[in-house]
Length: 451
Image 1: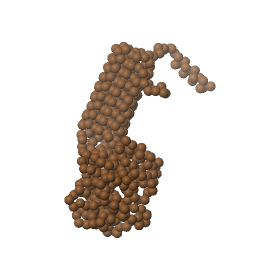
Image 2 (image 1 turned 30 degrees about the horizontal axis):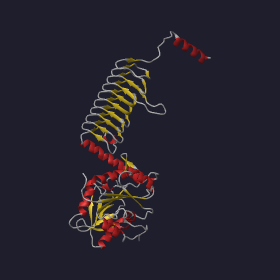
Image 3 (image 1 turned 180 degrees about the vertical axis):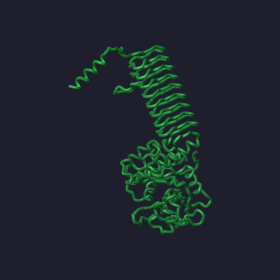
């Protein structure tokens, strides 16, 4: 549900991400098959931001390509002089805007929409705080900056770990860096932030002290530590992926799916499972998968970009590739690969089979080892298989080709021409038998070996 209030969002994505040791920009590394930056923009869009500004630096071409077409304004931080300096680069983009601004980080992707709404609500409260800071209490606070509270939710002090006393380090409330502040205050206070520190940088959290000098309070709201979890290394990326997957598995179970071994099932960001879906161990869902009620996905199957109909049965060891649509009560056997295949209700694609760029009619049966030969090295061609057709095992259908309704293709056939409805197509060499040949061959070869 979108929020009908006016607000803007600034997302900081200018960091170099050197600890990732990657040619890919840090915020573009994926979790659940979607970049961290797009995860965050999805949440921002769900809340209904009026303005969205992404601050980029090194690797800006990658970031701009990722968010092209999403109506996002780009601001450039040519030199990395701290988070406060990064936010200042959005000033021109918001020059004609005076409403609330939420500041987020492209490598901290999972702040919840409800938490963002709480930040706006607190900023709009009757006591009119100047700054709202999102904080959390992680199990291991590590070296996060600490927030020391005064009365109620008021911030008395924000201190970096390296500058904190032992007593302050014992405080569990940690600064996430995310905050909400009105635009007219934000850029005025940032102009007063000093870089008089060891790093010579302008720190965004310093506006809390500047606001206090201006007679304005800073307050805190607390969120789940998961929402404040950022990524600065491959290890942190992997740990956040694991936590996302754990939560998604719990959601699937709560919504009525059965996961036989939850920890071995991997979801994509947009996987949708119906009621009474059963997922066996070691199943991987890529992007764009929808599974209807009552379907069963057997072990070690990989599905991407496909829709699976009600009460369908997939696998084990099946690979379902993008563009595939399986209707209700279909069956896909073990070691089957489908690509851009439309399989109608009640059809069966049995084991050790490849069906690509094809349509399979209702109740058709595709025998084991069948291949639709869809590629000639230059182009892709379609195979059409009619209702109630039967394709014998180990057949090759050379596309483009059509198999009529109720037709039968004999096992081991190579079909290069259309098959009429209700007919039998049989293409194989005549079998011959040569009496005694095998015995004579063995005798000859045994004698040769003895010599």
